Image (cartoon, rainbow, N blue to C red; front, side, top):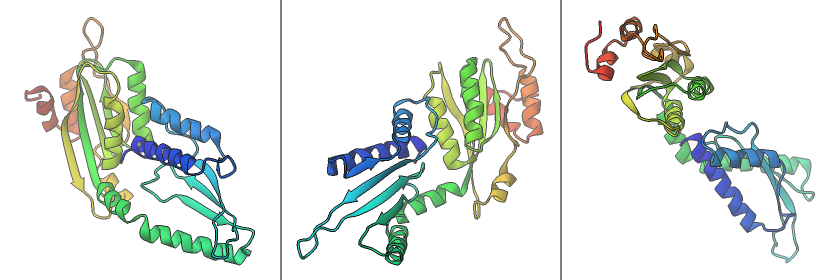
Length: 264
């Protein structure tokens, strides 16, 4: 699940809660700026990730068997990756002692862990133990903002690789499968004459730890690579230099996949 899909689910759930608890004193969003950032992120494809998580309070008055009312509040925070990760919930009530509240919240956390994270944990486990390398081809990459996005998004998602601007445009990103797919989801939504994944490599990792990920990388960071640009606009790269760069990185076979000819 991508960050934007998770954000869309959060907005949907907040709308549902607003319908279920229509009175102002029942459902209170305590950080309106965070909510505005989340909505802006969902509605604008170029928006950056929100800087703070949405937090809200539910004040609930359930009826008990003797027809009296018991009032309690639930302070909730939705992490950026919710619902892929569990929400943060704390229950408070003036009818409970401090020890009872601690015990109740401990039981609640156990319940959430055992009953609400089973489906997501299996999905993320298989996804997060796969190392992916995407070789992206574009008709051209000129726009400075797009070039900045490529560098910034790769850094945000802990991806390495390179970007060759000009005509044609070449982008390689490598890292966790989920991060590569999020990067591709963002990039392809920008305006392009033509852009596609020319080749994809997936490697299953045992354990999926940082050391295993680093071992698979062919590039240390993601940087822009220019190879003696020429042409009327200075936008045609020296493909011979590109081939030698790929050869140094152990990726020479990719050249033919991109351009249909043997490199030299």
